[in-house]
Image (cartoon, rainbow, N blue to C red; front, side, top):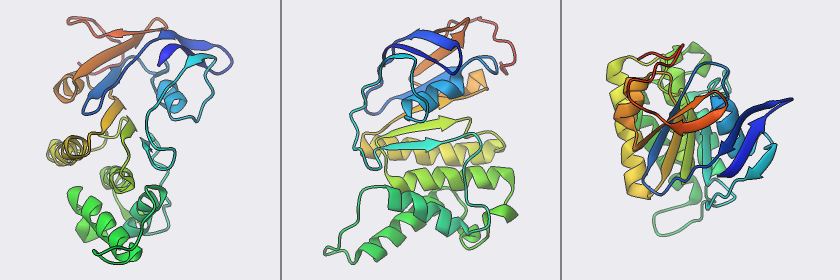
Length: 221
């Protein structure tokens, strides 16, 4: 990301310069309404930047996975169906010695659901799940997509500490095994420190490295 300015009717954040390499996790913290979600949506191509450049060296199909804060799940369909949408959006399946494309897709879906610890919910409609379980479905959907860059907007919220560890372990394992990378928005600064290779702060319209002892309003320290 080079000299990026983002926003809608007015600039929220300017002079954004950011590089992320394979295997890295970057967390972004800052007060509510400051531009964190807008930055993720801009990198994802959902919001047009005001100016600047975004260069993303991933495949056009399925190379970038996005876990939005509102999740975007199909609530009346099953966990399996939702995670299957991620698998379908990823690299096209081809029949090979391991079996048909349908068998390979099903394996990918089941593997992602299992990694999130919700195999017992595989046939449940999403609307019947708790908020934390729905967040795990959204994460499984992205893992099944097999992206090289994951953008996640507070994807650990509504999870208890035990399930935070389950989800983080699965995501870290995926990143390490696939040379992927992740940029996430996280409201809990200590958790962001524990997760990340780099911790960045959006404040006063700028994106800068987080400095110890910085007071961030509306952010849980």
